[in-house]
Amino acid sequence: MDDFLAVAQTDEVDDPGSMLVEISDRLVVLIHAAGHWYALDDICTHDGGPLSEGPLDAAEGTIACPRHGAKFDIKTGAALTMPATKPTASHDVKVEGSQVFVRLCE
Amino acid sequence: MTSTLAPTGFTQESFDAFLASLDEPEWLTELRGSAWQRFGELGMPSGRDEEWMRTDIRLLKLEKFSLSTAASDVTTPPALLAEGVDLGGQSTSVDSHGTVSFLEDSWASRGVLFGNFEAVIAEHGDRLRPYFERRLVDPFKDKFSALSAACWSGGCVLLVPKGVRIDQPLHTLSVMSNGGVDLSRTLVILEEGAEATLLAETASTEQHGGGLHCGTIELIVEKDARLRYVNLQNWGDGVWHFAHQMAHVGEAAGIQWTLGALGARLAKVNQRVALVGQDAEAQVNGAMFTQGKQHLTYNTHQHHKAAYCRSDLLYKAALQGNSRTVWRGMIKVDKGAQRTDAYQRNDNLMLATTARADSIPGLEIEADDVRCTHGSTSGRVDDQQLFYAMTRGYTRQEAVRMIVTGFFQQVFDRITIESVREALGEAIGRRVRDIGE
Image 1 (cartoon, rainbow over the protein chains, first blue to last red):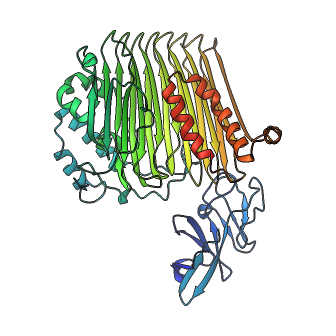
Image 2: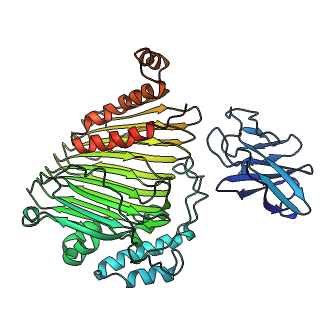
Image 3: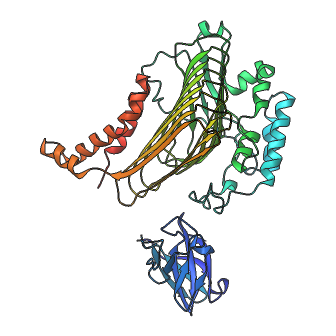
C-alpha cells in the first residue's frame, strides 16, 4: 500500500466541512466532522456524482450525493440509502501537528 | 528533429506563436481567431451538464499540455488497418504535424485531393474554403470543439470529385508521442456520385503513453456518393481523447462508418450522422474494448432531416477490470422526415463485476409515419456456454476469448473490408488474452 501523503493543513477544512483533494491521480473528499477526519473516494457509486459537492451531516456521520441523495457513511464509505447500493472506497487518515495525511487503501 | 513547444500551454502567447508558424490563407486564420476567442470564454464542461455528468474530467489539466510547433522524432508504430492492403494513398502525422503523404498518380490525375492538411490547404485552400465555412461541427459547442477549431493541425483531407470512384482504400495514421498533443482534423468530401474508402487510425508510440487528443472529423457525402469510413482509436491508455465527429449524407447517398475504440484513459466522443437528402442511408458500427480504469463515453446522434432515409447503428462493448463505458444514443426525426427507418442497438459484455456500462438510448420523433426502434443489453459471459466449451477441452480463458470474439462477430460481419475485420479482431483478441477473472 502507498504511504501516507500530506494533503491539507488542519485549518483548511472547517468542522464540519469537507474538501476535494487529488491524491495520485485520484479524487478524494477529505472530511472533517465532530473533531475527526475521514477520506472517501469522491464518487457516488450510483451515478458517479461528486460527494464533495453534497451535504455533510456530522451528527449522523453521513455525506450525501448532490444528484440523487444517496447517503454514505463517512467512516466506512458504506452505502446507507438508495439509490446507491455499493460502498465507495474509504481511506486512512492521520493528523500530525497541523498536517493532514491520507493513505489510499486500494 | 526534436519537439519544439510553444511557450506555456494554451495561452494567447502560444496561440500567436502557433499562428505565426502557419502559412495559411487569411480566411482560415480568421476562423481560427473566432474559435480561439470562444475557447477563452468557455469554461470546462461541468458535471452538472447532462452530457458530462457521467464523464468526470476534473483530473484533466489542460495547462499541462502545449501546442507543438514541430513534429517529434519518434518511431511510428505499425499501421494495423493498412496491413496487406493495396492502398491508393496514405498520409501520416506525428503530434499533429504531417510527415508522410502519397496518392497514386491514377487518382491524382482524376482530380482527387488527398494528404496532410497543411500541404493540401496551401495548394487548394480556395477549393476547400466552402467546406470549412459549412462548419459541420459547431466550433462553439464546447471548450474542446473551440480548441480544435482554433488550434487544429495535422490530420488529413480527402476530396473526391464528381463521379470518381476510388476502388483502392486510402489510409491515414495519426501518431502521438508520450505526453504529446494531437489536434488533428479530418475532412472528407465526396462530390456527387463519388465513392471512396478511408481507413483512419490513431496510435501512441507507447502502449501506456499519455497525452491529449482534441480533434474534429467532418464527412460530407454528396448526392449518390458512397463513403466507407473506418476509424480505429488506439491511443495509449494514458491519453485524454476528445472528439467531435459529424457526417452529412445527401440524397440517395450512403455512408458506412465503422468505429473501433480500444485506447485512451478517458474518451468523450460526439459522433453525429445527419441524413439531409431523401433516400440517404447510414450504417454505423462500433466496437469497444476497455480494461483497467479506462472510461469511454460515446454520444451518438442519428438525425433524420429528410424523408425515406435509413439509419442503422450497432455498438458493442466488452469491458474488463474497473473500466467503464457510457453510450448515449439518440435518433432524431424531423417533422418532414416521413417514412424514416431507424434503428440503434448497444450490447455490453461485462467481463468483470467491477466494470460498468451505462447504456442510454433515446428517440425524439416529430414525424408520424416512421419506424424507429432501439435496443440495449448488458450481461456477463454465459456460464453454460463456458461450461460447454470447457467440456470440449478448452481452458476457461480460451473459452472466454472465443465467446468474446463471437460477441463482436455481429459487428465484424457488417464490415466488408477484410483487412479492417482482421485488424479489429486481432486488436481485440490481444486484449482478451489477459482476462483474469
